[in-house]
Amino acid sequence: MDADGDFDSYTVDVVSLSLKKADGSTVDTLPVKPRIDFADLVDLKEFLTAVTIPPGTYVAGTLRLDYTNADIVVDVNGTPTHAVAVDANGNPLTTVDLDVQLDNRKQLTIVGGRPALLELDFDLLASNSVDTTKSPVQVTVQPVIVASVDVADSRQARVRGPLTSVDSAAGNYHVDLRPFNLASARLGDVTVHTTSTTQFEVDGTQYTGAPGIAAMAALSPGSPTAAYGTLDVLNRTFTATRVHAGTSVAGSQFDAIEGTVVARSGSNLIVHGVTLIKKTGSVVFKRGITTVVLGQTTKIIKDGPPDTSLTIGAVSVGQRILAFGTATESGDDVSLDATAGRVRMQLTHLLGTVKSLAVGGMTLDLSAINGRPATAFNFAGTRSQPALDAVVTSNYQVDTGVLPLTNLDVGSPARVFGFVAPFGTAPPDFTATTLVGFRDVQAVLSVGFGSNGTSAPFLTIDATAGLVIDNHNSRIDLRHFIAIGPRVYDVRQLASSPTVKPDASGGLFAIGEPNTVQVFSTFADFITALNSKLLTEKVVSISATGSYDATSNTLTAKRVMLQMR
Image (cartoon, rainbow, N blue to C red; front, side, top):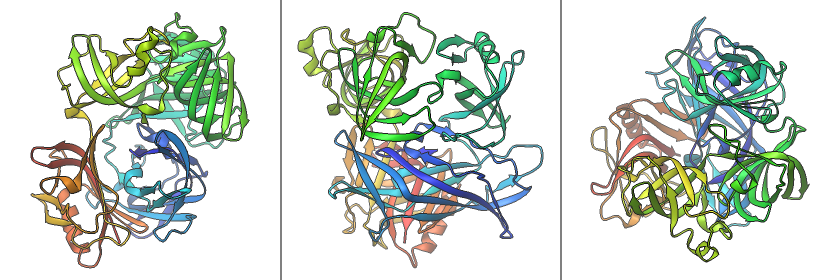
C-alpha cells in the first residue's frame, strides 16, 4: 500500500522483493516483475501472495525498484504534469535497492499450515521532495518502505485474479491471485468470502448477497474478478463488501478509463488525467484531456445498492467514474466512446471547510475533490439555476440525510464521501454517505532540512516528552507545514516549537538512511536509536501523521518517519 502523497501517478517497476533470515540466507518472494502505480494505493491496499517461503524467522527484506521507465505525474495547480525522478545529487534514478530492517520485537515468523502476514507501505510523503519550479518538474527520491507484521491498517483491501471456483452454499469463491494488473502468473489460491450485504456487479448487472454468488457461479472459470473488502487478521480471512466480475472488470471486454469529471458539455464528460486500461492488457496514466462520449444506450451504474433508474444525466462534475467503451488515443489525450458501454459512478471524496450546519445538510467552502483543487473544475450547468454556478465552490451544499453532525464544527475542515448530484439538478450539490469532522481528519507534519540535513533538528529528544522540533533552524527548506485537510500551519510561523509525541495506542516509527530503513514498534526504541545515530549523522527530514492539537502545539503521531544521511 502507499501513504498519502500529491501524485496523480507514481508508477515504477518492482524488480524483486526478498526476505532475509538472521543467518543471512534469503528467499525471493516475487516470481514476476509487477509494475505498480503507488498513487493508486493511497486509500487502498493490494494483496499479493508468496507460497514458497521456507519456515523460519525473517528479520529483514530488500525491495528493488526500477525507475528507468517510471511514469510520475504531479498535480500542479490542478494540471497533471510530467515529472522526472532524480537522486540527492540530481542524477536520473535507475535501479534502487532498499533494505527494510524489521523491529526485533516484531519479526516475521513463517510456520507450516498458517498464513503469515507482512504489510509493506511505500511512504510517498517521506520518500519524495517535489520541485515544481524546475522544467520538467523534478522529484528528488530517497525511497522509504515501512514494514510491519501487525497489519493494523484498516483501509480497504483489494483482491484481484481469474475465477477458479464458486461455493454457492458457503457463499465464497476462489481466485488465482493476480495483483497490480498482471495479465498472467499464478500467485496462489485465495478464498473470497461474501455476506448477505455484499454488493456484486457481474457482466454489468448488479446484485446483492446470494443472487450475486449465483451469478458468479454462472461465469466460466478464468473470468476476471476484483473484490474490495476487509481482512480478518486473527482468522486470516478476507470478506468482500464489493465484487466486480466478468465484463465488469476494467480491461476485459471494453477499454476503460478511471478519473474525475472536471466538466460536462451536453453528453460529453471531460476528465483531466486518467488511468487508461486497454482490453489488450496495457495500463497507462494519460495526463491530457479525456472526453467520454455518452449516449442514450450508455448504462449507468453506481457503487452501492442496485439502482435501475439511473440515466446519463446522473453523471455530473466532480464525480469519480470508471467508464467502459472504445478508446482512441492522440498523444496524451483520449476519446472514449461509451455509447455502447457503461459508466460506473464511484465513491467520491470532498475536502473543505464547514460554512454552515443544519439538520440534514451542510455547506462547504470546497477545497478539493478527489485530491484535485476545486479551482480545476468547471461547474457550468451543474445547478438548476445557471446564475448559481459561479458560487458552487464557495457554497457547496451537501445533503447529509440522517448522518450525525456532532463531529463537525463551523469554520473547521471536514472530509465527505458520497456522490455528486445529477447534472443540472443542484443544489444540493452532493449526497453524503460518510462524514469525517475536523477532530478525525488526519494531520500531516512534514519538515525538510535540505539535502545536507542538520545535526540539531530538535530542541528535545525524549521517549516521554517526545520530539520538539526547532522551528527556527536555519536549515529548514521548502517543506515546513502541518496540514489538516485544507487548513495548513506554517511550522516556522508557530509561536512555539511543535512537539511530536507517540499515540498511546502504539504506532510505527522508522529511521531511513540511504538504501536502508529501520522500523520500530515502540517510541522508546526509536528514540534510543535516534540518539545513537545523531552522533555521526544528520536529519534530512521528518514526516509524521496523527492528530494535531493547536492549543498545545502537539502532534500525537501514529507514524513518524525520519530521513537521515
